[in-house]
Length: 84
Image (tube, rainbow, N blue to C red):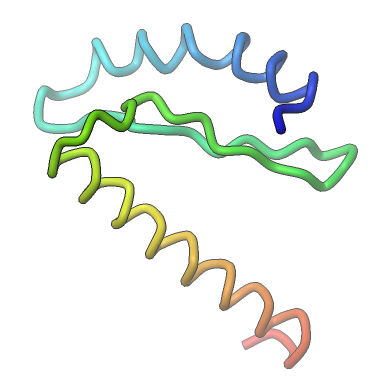
């Protein structure tokens, strides 16, 4: 489900990301952006790179998932076990 705030945020951020991708080194690519709604404590991930069945896309999204899972786990640990 996509909320209205997500649509609004995506519409506002996508042109900037496209511009940044054109400006940064060919070696790097912004493949997505996480956006948080500070009023509702919700967030969404906006993929720039679209899943296309390639090993490149699958590997990139798997790497991001691993990083985000680790950050989430650390955040929950801090919440329930006290800050590290």
